[in-house]
Image 1 (cartoon, helix red, strand yellow):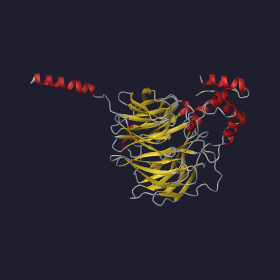
Image 2 (cartoon, chains in turn cyan, orange):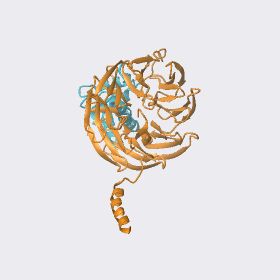
Image 3 (tube, one colour):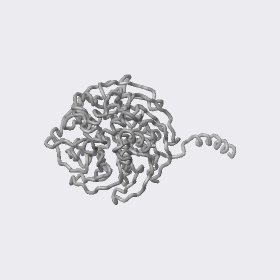
Image 4 (spheres, helix red, strand yellow):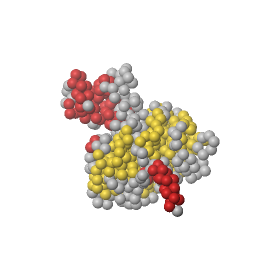
Amino acid sequence: MMSTLAALVAAPAMAEIPAPRATELEHMVIQDCGSCHGLTRKGGLGSPLTPAALSHAEPEGLALIILDGVPETAMPPWRPLLTEEEALWIADYLLKVDP
Amino acid sequence: MKHFLAALALCAAPAFADSPCCATGDLGLVVERASGSVLLVDRSDHAALARIEGLGDLSHASLTYSPDERFAFVFGRDGGLTKVDLLDRAIVARTIQAGNSIGGAISDDGKLVAVSNYKPGGVKVFDTETLALVADIPAEGKTIGLADLPGRRFIWAVWDNGHAYLGDFSGEGPVITDLGHVGANPFDAVVTDDAHTYLIGLFGEKGVTAIDLWEENPKPVRFLKDYGKKEEDMPVYKMPHLQGWAFTGGQFVLPAVGQHELLWVDRETLQEKGRTAMHGQPVFIIAQPASPYVWVNFATPSNGVVQIVDSRTHEVVRTLEPGKAVLHMEFAPRGAEVWVSVRDDNKVIVYDTRSFEKKGEIEAQAPSGIFFTARAHQPGL
């Protein structure tokens, strides 16, 4: 199920992320982002990240927040762990896939 | 006489039939965070007994036990408070009491269960028998570090305004006392095992705050004010957790936030006694009962490792690699074994704490917190 979802998202928009890595990224969103934003992305210490909550956000802007974090908050910069393409893939995933 | 005995047997039989079959002192629950279930386990048999489902979003879930060790109160991320019967292996009551919550505590007499909420922020208190609402204490933000204190009291802090509060529920209505400003963005807090000190970790500034709970008028005292100020902070990919924060050998052992270090502090003077360089950002630091050792796990991406540190020398004595994404460790109450949850390997590993050999392995779905029923008798848990 997880890999199917990942493949669906990855295929049209972000073909440059290989499927195994896309599966890892999806797992990271659910489990690691989920630590603060909730497994269902309804929020926690971090803000909600459902497609509805992000409806006014641009993928590029979200990718920058993922890469550089938000100063003075608990959102860390993920640049040491993610490429720019991968951050954009995650941004796209958050905007398109319902938890 | 025969008739009398027969009559006695008749009377006695139904009563015994209604009685539960098993004791609970050897049981525990493992949170399966992604599937909204808890796994009932037997500590001595290293076995899973049953899976109880339907508990909602259990990311960051924790739980506490009734004094008789029969019931668990599970605090879910989605605001769900669920009462689980360990003997009937079933949910007996459940309420969605807020939009978003983070943890809870049970009163020392077992009559009240309190939940710490993020949205709307505050603390709600429930009757443990029925889960009926007893009190609703709103807060100016997300409440963290909720813990029980003797005499039907609870203590907590608020991430957004940096204040700590004491709630006394022993009288007719709750009496809430503002204990003052403890620092910027308290992320978690814990009561020491002797209920003497409330220790509050800060994310928004360097330092830790202590409140002496034995004082007539408890006040926040800052310490470790300059830890890590010279070094550039590293990203914190998972907030440290302070429940289970280690108190050992006359010291507090604290996770440095943004540094890959443990900080050792003299319990009496609150002066730093040393530091230990670690494998990653420490998340849980838990004292192995009846020993000088503490066990430490780490934030992603360093979360495949557990390190064991000697509190006398402050040196790492052992590094284990249990598997992918180690989230929690729970000791047998007398310290002989430790259970380690390995989320991405879908298992819980049991280690012997003297030989470090694997004693058992239990399959579990994305396991996180492990909670043995012995917690029922520990203040602060």
